[in-house]
Amino acid sequence: MNEKRRILLKNSFAAGATGIVIGTGLLTPKAALAAWPKAAFEAKDSKSALQAEFGSSTLIPSNDIKLKAPDIAENGAVVPVTITSNIPDIDSISIVVQHNTWPIAATFKLGPTTDGYISTRIKMGKTSDVTAVVKAGGKLYSTTKNVKVTIGGCGG
Amino acid sequence: MSRSSIKVRAKVKNGKAKVKMLISHPMETGLRKNKKTKKLIPAHFIQEVVCEHDGTKVLDAEWNATISKNPFLSFSFNGAKPGDSIKISWVDNTGKSDSTEVKMR
Image 1 (tube, each protein chain N blue to C red):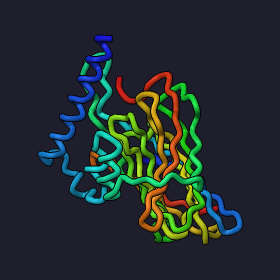
Image 2: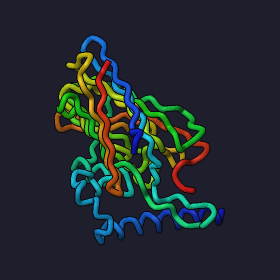
Image 3: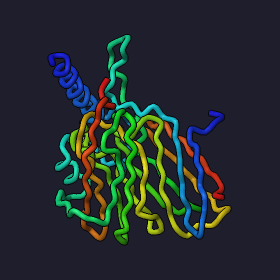
Image 4: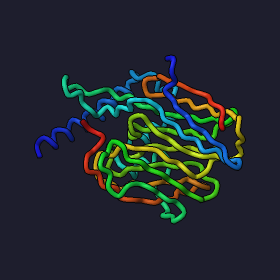
Protein backbone atom coordinates (compact mmCIF):
# COMPACT_ATOMS: atom_id res chain seq x y z
CA MET A 1 0.00 0.00 0.00
CA ASN A 2 2.73 2.42 1.02
CA GLU A 3 4.71 1.52 -2.03
CA LYS A 4 1.77 2.32 -4.26
CA ARG A 5 1.31 5.69 -2.66
CA ARG A 6 4.93 6.53 -3.19
CA ILE A 7 4.73 5.64 -6.85
CA LEU A 8 1.66 7.81 -7.19
CA LEU A 9 3.45 10.71 -5.53
CA LYS A 10 6.45 10.29 -7.75
CA ASN A 11 4.28 10.11 -10.82
CA SER A 12 2.50 13.32 -10.02
CA PHE A 13 5.80 14.99 -9.21
CA ALA A 14 7.25 13.85 -12.53
CA ALA A 15 4.29 15.24 -14.42
CA GLY A 16 4.69 18.51 -12.58
CA ALA A 17 8.38 18.68 -13.40
CA THR A 18 7.73 18.10 -17.09
CA GLY A 19 5.26 20.93 -16.98
CA ILE A 20 7.82 23.27 -15.48
CA VAL A 21 10.46 22.29 -18.01
CA ILE A 22 8.08 22.96 -20.85
CA GLY A 23 6.91 26.15 -19.22
CA THR A 24 10.40 27.59 -19.04
CA GLY A 25 10.94 26.86 -22.70
CA LEU A 26 13.77 24.40 -22.15
CA LEU A 27 12.12 22.06 -24.59
CA THR A 28 12.46 24.27 -27.60
CA PRO A 29 10.81 21.95 -30.14
CA LYS A 30 7.50 22.95 -28.58
CA ALA A 31 7.69 26.18 -30.51
CA ALA A 32 7.91 24.33 -33.79
CA LEU A 33 4.88 22.33 -32.82
CA ALA A 34 2.47 25.13 -32.20
CA ALA A 35 -0.35 22.92 -33.40
CA TRP A 36 0.13 20.41 -30.61
CA PRO A 37 -2.62 21.19 -28.07
CA LYS A 38 -0.45 21.27 -24.96
CA ALA A 39 -3.13 22.55 -22.59
CA ALA A 40 -5.57 19.85 -23.60
CA PHE A 41 -3.04 17.03 -23.64
CA GLU A 42 -1.57 17.91 -20.27
CA ALA A 43 -4.87 18.49 -18.51
CA LYS A 44 -5.27 16.13 -15.59
CA ASP A 45 -8.99 15.39 -15.77
CA SER A 46 -11.04 14.57 -18.80
CA LYS A 47 -13.50 17.43 -18.38
CA SER A 48 -10.91 20.21 -18.46
CA ALA A 49 -9.05 18.34 -21.19
CA LEU A 50 -12.14 18.33 -23.36
CA GLN A 51 -12.79 21.95 -22.50
CA ALA A 52 -9.27 22.90 -23.61
CA GLU A 53 -9.38 20.78 -26.75
CA PHE A 54 -12.85 21.56 -28.03
CA GLY A 55 -14.04 24.52 -25.95
CA SER A 56 -16.85 22.39 -24.61
CA SER A 57 -17.15 19.29 -22.48
CA THR A 58 -20.74 18.49 -23.41
CA LEU A 59 -20.80 15.10 -25.04
CA ILE A 60 -23.79 13.70 -26.89
CA PRO A 61 -23.96 9.90 -26.53
CA SER A 62 -24.29 8.40 -29.98
CA ASN A 63 -25.03 4.95 -31.35
CA ASP A 64 -23.33 5.85 -34.61
CA ILE A 65 -19.90 5.41 -33.11
CA LYS A 66 -18.49 1.96 -32.58
CA LEU A 67 -15.67 1.63 -30.10
CA LYS A 68 -13.89 -1.67 -30.24
CA ALA A 69 -11.66 -2.35 -27.27
CA PRO A 70 -11.09 -5.44 -25.14
CA ASP A 71 -13.29 -5.98 -22.06
CA ILE A 72 -10.22 -7.03 -20.14
CA ALA A 73 -6.77 -5.87 -21.20
CA GLU A 74 -4.12 -8.15 -19.79
CA ASN A 75 -1.34 -5.73 -20.58
CA GLY A 76 -2.14 -2.06 -20.07
CA ALA A 77 0.86 -1.07 -22.18
CA VAL A 78 -0.81 -2.27 -25.35
CA VAL A 79 -4.58 -1.89 -25.57
CA PRO A 80 -5.90 -2.09 -29.12
CA VAL A 81 -8.64 0.45 -29.81
CA THR A 82 -10.67 0.74 -33.00
CA ILE A 83 -13.18 3.50 -33.59
CA THR A 84 -15.63 3.35 -36.46
CA SER A 85 -18.26 5.99 -37.06
CA ASN A 86 -20.65 6.70 -39.89
CA ILE A 87 -21.52 10.22 -38.75
CA PRO A 88 -21.12 12.48 -41.82
CA ASP A 89 -18.52 15.28 -42.03
CA ILE A 90 -16.29 14.22 -39.17
CA ASP A 91 -13.69 16.82 -38.22
CA SER A 92 -11.81 14.81 -35.67
CA ILE A 93 -11.80 11.65 -33.58
CA SER A 94 -10.32 11.68 -30.08
CA ILE A 95 -9.56 8.90 -27.64
CA VAL A 96 -10.09 9.81 -23.98
CA VAL A 97 -9.04 7.49 -21.14
CA GLN A 98 -10.70 8.82 -17.98
CA HIS A 99 -8.25 7.56 -15.37
CA ASN A 100 -4.95 8.06 -17.16
CA THR A 101 -2.53 10.74 -15.96
CA TRP A 102 -3.30 12.65 -19.14
CA PRO A 103 -6.80 11.66 -20.24
CA ILE A 104 -6.59 12.65 -23.91
CA ALA A 105 -4.64 9.95 -25.71
CA ALA A 106 -4.85 11.32 -29.20
CA THR A 107 -6.81 13.49 -31.57
CA PHE A 108 -7.03 12.45 -35.18
CA LYS A 109 -7.98 15.26 -37.54
CA LEU A 110 -9.55 13.77 -40.62
CA GLY A 111 -9.38 15.15 -44.12
CA PRO A 112 -12.57 15.50 -46.21
CA THR A 113 -12.02 12.18 -47.98
CA THR A 114 -10.99 10.26 -44.88
CA ASP A 115 -13.35 7.68 -43.41
CA GLY A 116 -14.54 7.69 -39.84
CA TYR A 117 -12.22 4.87 -38.98
CA ILE A 118 -9.16 4.83 -36.73
CA SER A 119 -7.34 1.87 -35.25
CA THR A 120 -4.41 2.20 -32.90
CA ARG A 121 -2.94 0.95 -29.63
CA ILE A 122 -2.89 2.87 -26.38
CA LYS A 123 -1.46 2.58 -22.87
CA MET A 124 -3.71 2.44 -19.83
CA GLY A 125 -2.54 2.89 -16.24
CA LYS A 126 -5.52 1.18 -14.67
CA THR A 127 -9.09 0.07 -15.26
CA SER A 128 -10.94 2.97 -16.80
CA ASP A 129 -13.68 4.13 -19.09
CA VAL A 130 -12.41 4.70 -22.61
CA THR A 131 -14.37 7.30 -24.55
CA ALA A 132 -14.34 7.91 -28.26
CA VAL A 133 -15.17 11.54 -28.98
CA VAL A 134 -16.18 12.39 -32.53
CA LYS A 135 -16.41 16.02 -33.53
CA ALA A 136 -18.75 16.64 -36.46
CA GLY A 137 -20.58 19.79 -37.44
CA GLY A 138 -19.46 21.59 -34.30
CA LYS A 139 -20.97 18.96 -32.02
CA LEU A 140 -19.25 16.34 -29.90
CA TYR A 141 -20.56 12.79 -30.05
CA SER A 142 -19.28 10.04 -27.84
CA THR A 143 -19.33 6.37 -26.98
CA THR A 144 -17.83 4.94 -23.83
CA LYS A 145 -16.59 1.51 -22.94
CA ASN A 146 -15.09 0.26 -19.71
CA VAL A 147 -11.81 -1.59 -20.09
CA LYS A 148 -10.42 -3.60 -17.20
CA VAL A 149 -6.66 -3.56 -16.91
CA THR A 150 -4.83 -6.27 -15.02
CA ILE A 151 -1.29 -4.89 -15.40
CA GLY A 152 -0.88 -1.15 -15.81
CA GLY A 153 1.18 0.27 -18.63
CA CYS A 154 2.01 3.80 -17.61
CA GLY A 155 4.24 4.01 -14.55
CA GLY A 156 7.32 1.91 -13.86
CA MET B 1 19.37 6.46 -40.64
CA SER B 2 19.46 4.06 -43.46
CA ARG B 3 16.25 2.31 -42.60
CA SER B 4 13.12 4.29 -42.07
CA SER B 5 11.43 4.10 -38.70
CA ILE B 6 8.10 3.86 -40.49
CA LYS B 7 6.65 0.77 -42.08
CA VAL B 8 3.64 1.45 -44.27
CA ARG B 9 1.26 -0.77 -46.14
CA ALA B 10 -1.36 0.93 -48.26
CA LYS B 11 -3.82 -0.93 -50.40
CA VAL B 12 -6.45 0.47 -52.71
CA LYS B 13 -9.72 -1.31 -53.37
CA ASN B 14 -12.58 0.32 -55.30
CA GLY B 15 -11.14 3.80 -54.76
CA LYS B 16 -10.82 3.29 -51.03
CA ALA B 17 -7.35 3.20 -49.60
CA LYS B 18 -6.61 1.39 -46.38
CA VAL B 19 -3.38 2.47 -44.76
CA LYS B 20 -1.63 0.61 -41.97
CA MET B 21 1.58 1.76 -40.40
CA LEU B 22 4.01 0.78 -37.71
CA ILE B 23 6.47 3.31 -36.38
CA SER B 24 9.41 2.22 -34.27
CA HIS B 25 9.62 4.66 -31.40
CA PRO B 26 10.09 4.24 -27.61
CA MET B 27 7.09 6.45 -26.69
CA GLU B 28 8.37 7.16 -23.17
CA THR B 29 5.80 8.89 -20.99
CA GLY B 30 8.32 10.44 -18.62
CA LEU B 31 6.68 8.59 -15.73
CA ARG B 32 8.71 5.40 -15.95
CA LYS B 33 11.84 4.78 -13.92
CA ASN B 34 15.08 3.15 -14.91
CA LYS B 35 15.20 0.17 -12.54
CA LYS B 36 18.99 0.29 -12.12
CA THR B 37 19.61 3.99 -11.63
CA LYS B 38 16.19 4.74 -10.05
CA LYS B 39 16.03 7.79 -12.25
CA LEU B 40 13.05 8.80 -14.30
CA ILE B 41 13.36 8.11 -17.98
CA PRO B 42 12.68 11.43 -19.73
CA ALA B 43 9.56 11.74 -21.83
CA HIS B 44 10.14 10.94 -25.47
CA PHE B 45 7.09 10.46 -27.60
CA ILE B 46 5.67 11.27 -31.00
CA GLN B 47 3.44 14.31 -30.95
CA GLU B 48 2.25 14.57 -34.48
CA VAL B 49 1.81 12.21 -37.40
CA VAL B 50 0.80 13.64 -40.74
CA CYS B 51 -0.38 11.53 -43.66
CA GLU B 52 -0.53 13.01 -47.11
CA HIS B 53 -2.08 11.51 -50.23
CA ASP B 54 -0.46 13.03 -53.31
CA GLY B 55 0.25 16.20 -51.34
CA THR B 56 -3.20 16.48 -49.75
CA LYS B 57 -3.41 16.00 -46.03
CA VAL B 58 -5.73 13.11 -45.24
CA LEU B 59 -4.92 12.63 -41.57
CA ASP B 60 -3.31 14.83 -38.94
CA ALA B 61 -2.87 12.88 -35.74
CA GLU B 62 -1.92 14.62 -32.52
CA TRP B 63 -0.62 12.14 -30.02
CA ASN B 64 -0.06 12.15 -26.33
CA ALA B 65 2.40 9.85 -24.58
CA THR B 66 -0.58 7.55 -24.06
CA ILE B 67 -0.04 5.88 -27.42
CA SER B 68 1.76 2.54 -27.06
CA LYS B 69 5.43 1.92 -27.73
CA ASN B 70 6.14 1.26 -31.40
CA PRO B 71 2.83 2.79 -32.43
CA PHE B 72 0.42 1.15 -34.79
CA LEU B 73 -2.09 3.21 -36.72
CA SER B 74 -4.62 2.30 -39.32
CA PHE B 75 -7.08 4.49 -41.21
CA SER B 76 -8.77 4.66 -44.58
CA PHE B 77 -9.75 7.29 -47.10
CA ASN B 78 -11.56 7.59 -50.42
CA GLY B 79 -10.61 8.84 -53.87
CA ALA B 80 -7.39 6.89 -54.24
CA LYS B 81 -6.03 4.77 -57.05
CA PRO B 82 -3.15 2.32 -57.20
CA GLY B 83 0.15 4.07 -57.85
CA ASP B 84 -0.78 7.18 -55.87
CA SER B 85 1.77 8.16 -53.29
CA ILE B 86 1.22 8.29 -49.57
CA LYS B 87 3.60 10.20 -47.38
CA ILE B 88 3.81 9.67 -43.64
CA SER B 89 5.82 11.94 -41.37
CA TRP B 90 6.14 12.26 -37.61
CA VAL B 91 7.65 14.71 -35.14
CA ASP B 92 8.40 13.88 -31.50
CA ASN B 93 8.74 16.05 -28.40
CA THR B 94 12.51 16.24 -28.71
CA GLY B 95 12.23 17.66 -32.21
CA LYS B 96 13.27 14.48 -34.00
CA SER B 97 11.34 13.57 -37.08
CA ASP B 98 11.18 11.06 -39.87
CA SER B 99 9.15 10.57 -42.99
CA THR B 100 8.61 8.04 -45.69
CA GLU B 101 6.78 7.98 -48.98
CA VAL B 102 5.39 4.88 -50.66
CA LYS B 103 3.32 4.05 -53.69
CA MET B 104 -0.04 2.53 -52.94
CA ARG B 105 -0.93 -0.84 -54.33
